[in-house]
Image (tube, rainbow, N blue to C red; front, side, top):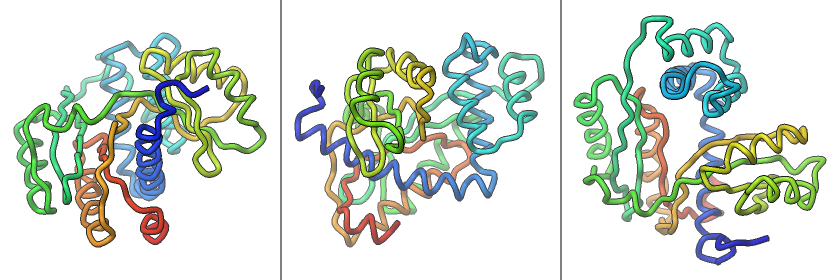
Length: 261
């Protein structure tokens, strides 16, 4: 079932994304305890509701974010207020989407997606984070070309075979399905993401995560000596309140990832 993603080059890119995704998932559990992820999700719900309306049945993006918020144990009242702020039923802050591009140690490409109510402040603070953590902010278009926007859905292997899932997602328009440890990773183009996700839901197949993400087309090898420096930069960016997502094309050796994990 491999399409263009069958090439070794892009399989390597997906592997790199999987490694980074595993770190993000572990970190998300910690962030949930601190409540930081609530702040980011509330902003995203507000913006998505403003863009596509407050009804999750007709706004699939909102439906996905709500599911993510519920998985993070966000109270229903918080979700409802965020939606109403987005639709204008309640007074709220207006957020703008901004993307910053830069480099980390050893030329690692980094994309930083933000939602902010003050672009000048955010730009200054993101620049400061890069400079203080051995990176540098770059101009628009410097690294964006390295990444491709894709849908990525992660499904636990338990109770379902690859053939079962493959039949469902292919019929719904998925591009590829790969194995990553004890999980299946399904990639889609952005147009078919919602159809594939809905098809899994209708088949009662649980998803561990489902998101529109930026997958690197190529990876930057990182030597063991500077791995922690790269991860420190990315973590510092993710800690910023205005930052929603950080994407990087770092290729970290498996043995080093195991040690860090």
